[in-house]
Image 1 (spheres, rainbow, N blue to C red):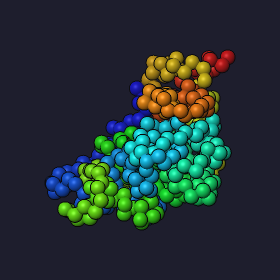
Image 2: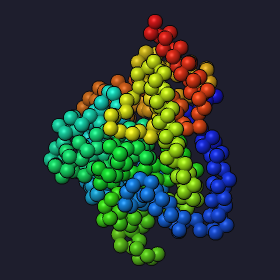
Image 3: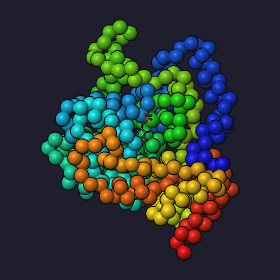
Image 4: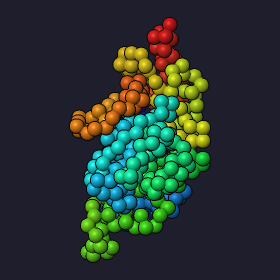
Length: 365
Ligand SMILES: *Cc1c(COP(=O)(O)O)cnc(C)c1O
């Protein structure tokens, strides 16, 4: 069986080094904070080509920290897309903000910037751009729009470690970028983990305080905060895995190029000036999607749907007057994520292409 994501395969090449890093934390019995977390924050900031990186407990707390640090509060409108993971909008509600959805583009599955511009109101305080599947929209254009209207800009980059727009990574055009190190992500821990990045020192200081009980020293608390810290064992693992991140992304991009050339199905497109980290490779299967997924399964290939229910149609948001988002709904009915992880062999890529194209030919003849 070819899984959608192979966590074991990503561990094995670095097993010795990772095991040693974990053992080192245990031997020192320094489990919270410390030099290893600081080291990871420095290394990750360097990787992201950004001034500050603050480790935190997961990608969801990273979003919550970002909104709090930017001062988003009760009644403030925050614009985002309906085709994302639920955590994006949960964070808006957690600070008392009002969720406002904007539809996406059919080709890229990313925020429709014309619609974004039209949907901005006097109550709009922030926009959360979601770099879905590793793809990045025209951040320069979005920045021009939000800057002109004095609106704060966040990138939910939980799926976009190392992705680029015009050679710049998340957090360059925006105020803050957030990351998740959920095990399956492009950079994954052995449990939960996350990070917030920014070029703004003031935001960085506030995030650092909020993530650790608002403390400056052990028992002095400047403000009330949270326990949203990144685990030291996770930081130790991430420090090792970070070394392979760029080469893993290059391999993911190679796999994507392979699929782009050989698969018959349409796929989520990369913007001309973007460089996706390809967290997921997503094809569009408008006909017989469920049958297609079962057929892949029977042929030893796992697939996923990201995401089957757009957020405006979630039971949790019943009663919220959101409007219609036809493109997000259409995509939800068509998308299928197929394996693209860097440890796939050429033989496996070839096999997946062959199996997928047989179904395409059958259902389009
Ligand atoms: C994974 C993910 C999150 C949440 O990250 P966790 O670490 O699981 O809390 C948020 N947004 C997006 C787009 C994600 O893919």
